[in-house]
Image 1 (cartoon, rainbow, N blue to C red):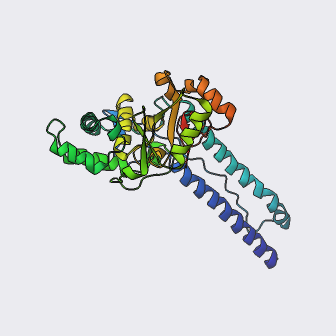
Image 2 (cartoon, one colour; image 1 turned 120 degrees about the horizontal axis):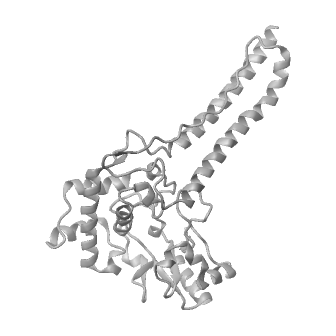
Image 3 (cartoon, one colour; image 1 turned 120 degrees about the vertical axis):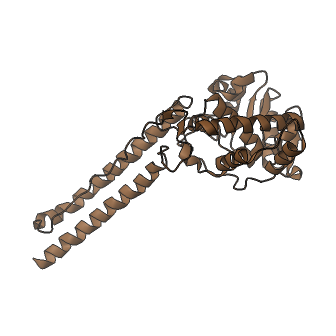
Length: 332
């Protein structure tokens, strides 16, 4: 009987260990989406508390008594799939939650992260200076302007105005924060805030105001235009960290300080693949519709699909927390 008890205990420890690992692994994954953390400095907008995130589901724990009859030992192998089923249910629920975010990308959702009132004012002030830098250096050059260059222009040009200490802290915080706090699950592309786009590595595309990296990106655009014709245009190419700040901060302002909602439409600074080769295409004379799901109905998109040459970065069923972008060409 002692031998049977040891077998029972060994199986019990194995099952409890396997169950605990499943719960810890999935619990950690789920916690990445909990944007109401007390450690985050941006967990509310003026006077409004963010509602608590849903509780983490916990897999059912299987317990075997040490004095269980021998038949329990024989049945224990049949109980293991129950743990797997619970795990799969949690993963399925998480996938569904992420897909819902993609589908409802431009809504305020439970668990979204907001700027505080002070951060809201600082972001608007910093964004205004970034816009003035863009107007000063010109649209094309601004696309590849580095962070250090931006600071030099702001400091030396009176009409722009130097960034103050609080604004700089805000800029750094938004670059170095983990975007998973916002619900954005894409990977970090640029690790250094002062990263520079070397002019020797890029080509300015005539008539677009945009740059592309020499080599694969530039050649792929040419190949697309050769297949589709002049109706296919480049709508966004290489983006420096500064360019991504300008676009992202404008999204945050348009969304009244909801950082998470903004990140569902545009990658936060440092997370954009436009910094490593991706680019956007559109149809000539299609205007802002080139940056909406309506682009999928354009003749350019239909021809790209028919030719089988379109490679989309953020598909309609992506689990990265980003809206569907049929115009975004994946290169990396």
